[in-house]
Structures are given as structure tokens and as C-alpha cells.
Image 1 (cartoon, rainbow, N blue to C red):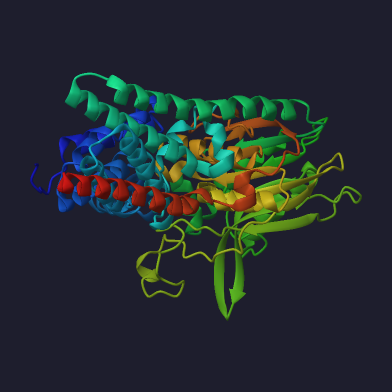
Image 2: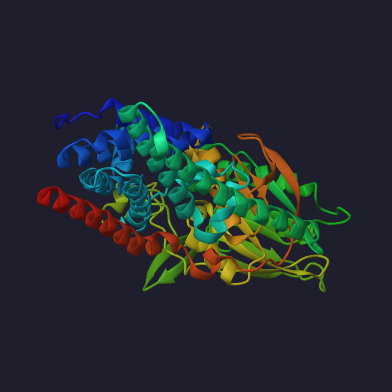
Length: 552
């Protein structure tokens, strides 16, 4: 039996590498079906402490390999030295990626030993695989983590398989991946031991094919139905997206009060928007990404800021088309000014040319830890002077819907999401329950560098559209801006780190409410009683076999 050691075993490293390769930006999704097999074969043989340690190493390795852009973001946004940025990445990897795997490793070890006590028969092995899959799903739901990088995201490019996300979200996709991994692990162990497949092997291979067939069959039914509904949609809107590609240095300079940098920022978005003024037929909506209006909208603090606000107002009046844009918002609360990361939508007064239109605002609710908020500390924290770039933003009230009237006098209900809020299935579902017809996700991925995170963020967004069956428009300062259909297809997208504009034709159709929208992000929590029952069954089978061995 391997001894307890402090370093990661090679099989743990292999699993971490396979997981990373299956996820964006590598997108070798087929590897995810075997990614856990080396690690499972290891922890099943380790003592309790060694299993937990290798679970910790797997979670850590996955975090480092999948999200190295965390270090880039800390360097770009907070301005910390690279050694500190690497330390932050290590802390993130140890606590944020998949911390529940430490506990799951103990469950795997225990279950494997109970199954061995029962003689490792076909029925016991199949029961064990199901129990471990549901245990992983339930632990993932109940163990806190700041960033969900579940294995189910590796299936974002699987056009048919990803359709099951409208039932149970990414948690259900992850369950499918983990269940297949456990079956392949048991199949591998049996073949290595017996040197042949036998009935055990063929039954496990059949179980794998059955899981794939069920998921693929559901997608084969749902995907054509969704495509047909949108092909037959009697309403659509034309959305113009501006991707300004403003460098991070310029954004930081205007945030410090540099008026020239603020002019550069605003011009990068106003100049392309000029091309749409007077267009026939007009667009139905123009979108700028997160924090593109430089400053606090509607609250100029200087003559220069007032001049920029007036210039922007004049363009909005001449545009005469609804416009949604990111900006900061501020409000006095208990005598203290509170800053918000916000998205504004201005709808013109079509009956009165040149009149101020309706202004709607959404304040970001799910703030990004260590960028927009410091977990465990309030806005009045004494640490604030030492972290001048940290937002310490206020929390908005949660999901809401913009009611936007287009130049054709049609009303469109839009669910706003700002940047990292697209990670939350619950947030997207809440917007859908409010009657949204379209998800509008604005972001600023440039802080994370030009490689890795933009692709991962786009993959995450595709699953939000599948879960809610809503089309989605993404607008990002440096990219990737895109149009995502309700089946998860990215039908149009921008290039990364290139200033560009997109004109998107977005069909609107009313589809039945999905299970995930109706019940929220329910699947992981509902997996707990199933996991407990299955694990009890594994224990009972092992106990009965042990009793027979003693009495024989």
C-alpha cells in the first residue's frame, strides 16, 4: 500500500492535466470522460490521510492549470508584484476550484473498500459508481466555493449532450461526466485484474453507453425543437454591439481621474456608435460593455466630466435608439457614499424628439471576490486605504428585467448580467422567471489577459442560455462579444482583443419554462438524499458479505 506522502502522486498530476486539457481554452472535451480515472485508481488504495491529501492536490492542480489567468488579473487590476500574484493564484486554487474533492476522496476510498468487502461483483460495482457520482454532485452543491469550474463545462461544445443542462444545469452535466469516469475506472480495474472483459466488463461498457445514449437522446429531441421554435419566431430584434478594446492602462488612468484617458475611453465607444445614427432601418438596441462610460453616470464631479456627460447625452438623443451601457452608480446610504457597478438602459421618447428618455438601472448583485469586494470585510474596512484599486462596491438587489421599447414600438424584456454574474445559474434563472426574453451580459475580460479566461467565460455563458432557453447577447470590452442561441450555439462572435462592432439579429420566441428556471439550481442539493441512500446500500451489501464470510 502506498505510504502517506506530502507530494502529489503522478496519477493525481495526470488527472489534473487531463481535466485542464478538456476545458477552455484547450477544449479537448473528449478527455474529460477519462480524466478522473488515474486519480480514482490511486485514492482507492491509499490510507485515509493520503486519500484526502491527493484530493487536495487534485483540486489545487486543477485550479492552477485551469485558471492561471487569476494571477494575470491580480497583476493587472490590483497592481501587485508577480510573486504575490502567484501566491494569490495558489490560494485560489487551494480554496476555490473544487475543494469538495478533499471530502469526495474519502468517500471514494470508503466506497471502494466496502465494495471490495462485498466481493466486487457487477451489481455492487454499478451501485458504487452511481453512489460516487451523486456524492460528488451533492458535495459540490454544499461545500462553498467562489468560482464554479465544474467538469460539466467541458461539454459546452457537445451540441446534443449539453441540452440536458435545462433539466439540472452544469451539476447534471458534471454528474454524467463523473458517473462515466467511475464506470471506466471500475472497468479498467477489472480488466487489469482479470486480463479480460468478461460479463463484468461488458455490463459496465453497456452502462456507459446507456448513460451517453440517454443524454444524447434527450438532446436529439430537444435541440431540433428549440431550433424550430426560433426559426419560426415571429419577433426579432437587431442589436448593435460595440467592442472598443480599450487597454487596461487607459481604464486605470481614467479611474484615477485622468481626463485625457476618460476622453479616449468614451471616444472608443462613441465613434463606432456614430455609424448607426440615421441608419434605416434603425437598430433596436445598442450595447456597450461593462464600465464603458467613464465615471459615475448622472453625477459629474467636475467641468470636464460634465462636458463628457453632455457630449454623451447629445449622441444618445441623435441616436434615437435604446442604448445599454456599463457605468458606475453612487448613492448615499446612512450618510456614506456607496459605489455600484451598474448597467444603465436609456429608451428614447419617440413621441418627443430631443426629450430625455426613460433611464433604467441595474446594480450588480453577485460581486467578484478580491476585485469588487473583499470577502468578510465591509465597505468601511480599515484595509480599504491599503487596497486603492479594490472596488468595495455595494451589492445590488438581485435579478431584474429592463423593459425596453424599440423604434418599432415593440417591447422587449431584457435580463441584465454584469461580467461574473454569468457564472451563476441561479441569477440567470431568476431573470427568466421575471419574464425576460433575452439575457444581456456585459463584461470586461481584459483584466484576465488575452488567453484562457475569455474562452472560458464564453463557454460558461453558453450554458446559461441552455439552462434558461433564452438567447444571449455578450458585450465585452476586449472580447469575446457574441450572440448565443438558446441551444448553446455561438452563432456570431468577435475576435479577441480587436476593436469591432457586431450587428446581431436576435430572434425572440416564447419557450416553455425549463426545470432549472422553475426550481432554480436544484440538482446538486437534490443529489444529497440519493447519494446517502446509495452509499447506505453499498455499506449494507458489504456488511452482509462480511457476515457471510464470518459464518462460513
